[in-house]
Image 1 (cartoon, one colour):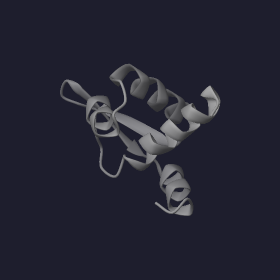
Image 2 (cartoon, rainbow, N blue to C red):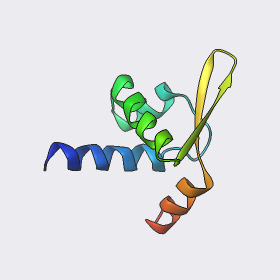
Image 3 (cartoon, rainbow, N blue to C red):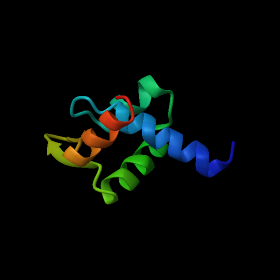
Image 4 (cartoon, rainbow, N blue to C red):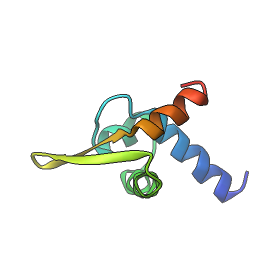
Length: 77
């Protein structure tokens, strides 16, 4: 599998993991991804309009946008 394919698959896993607003750390841990790599994936998903972020105290929480929800629903959740 190419590096690009691995990145796309990881981004899809990250997007599917955002059922509730969560921090980068809380996304990375259950997926077995490094926090830095997860942050990079979230930045790409944010630029694509698939996730949104909001500050909650000292944390930044990410959640899917309606477009992200539609994409994950169309991909079988």
